[in-house]
Length: 80
Image (cartoon, rainbow, N blue to C red):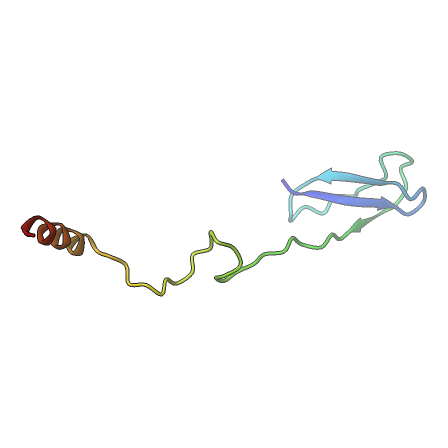
């Protein structure tokens, strides 16, 4: 279940509540029982695409060596 942060309108205290996304609970302040407002937090940064980190799967400029190419290279080196 997601965690949501609320702020009390009366005593201005912040607290977190776990509840479902579609659930509309009547949240009251844990400290004084007053009305609350949901505090919206910014989402985390998500980098999509290639090139941000070394571990990203970016397109290789070099042609990948297939297993059949490797075996033919080994056969040629044995003949020499």
